[in-house]
Length: 188
Ligand SMILES: [Zn+2]
Image 1 (tube, rainbow, N blue to C red):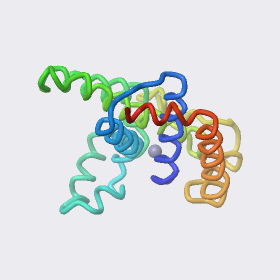
Image 2 (image 1 turned 90 degrees about the horizontal axis):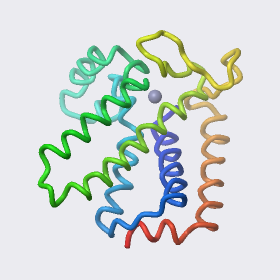
Image 3 (image 1 turned 45 degrees about the vertical axis):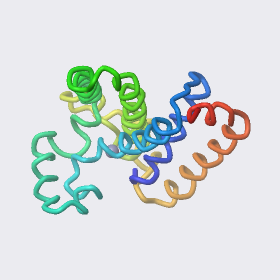
C-alpha cells in the first residue's frame, strides 16, 4: 500500500478514535499529534531502502540498506506484533526517562498519536496481496480475505487509488459531519 493511502487511513483511524475517546490537547500539541499520526503511518515501511524518506536524505540509500539489514527486509519485524510492542516500549521508555517531567504528558499524547498511525499501517497492509507477517519470526503472512492474491489490494493499483482512498475520504467526511466537535476539541 502506498505512503499516501497509509497516511489517509491513519488519520481516519485517529479521528475515529477521537470520537470514542475525546481529548483536549491544545492547538500546538493537537497540530503536532496530527503530524505524529502521519509519521507513525510511514515508519513501518522504513525497512524498504526505496522508502521516500531515505531517497530524500543525503546518503539515505546506504542508511536505508543498513536499516533493512537489521530489520530483516520489507514487511518483517516492523510489521509484526513483536515489532509494534518493541518500538512502542522503547519510545515510551525514552520519553519517561529522558524528557523533562513537565513535558511528559504532552509527549505521551504524541506517543499515542504516533502509535495509532504505526499500528494502522500493518492493519491496512493485511488487505494487500502479500499480507503481513503479524507473528514474525514465524513466516506466516496473514491476509484478509484469504485465498488467491487477486482478491486483495495491489499497491498503486486502481483499486487502491480509487476505491480504497475513495472509501477513506467518504468515511472521513461522514465522520466529520457527525462528529466535528470531537475534532475541534483536540485543538482546545
Ligand atoms: Zn507496509
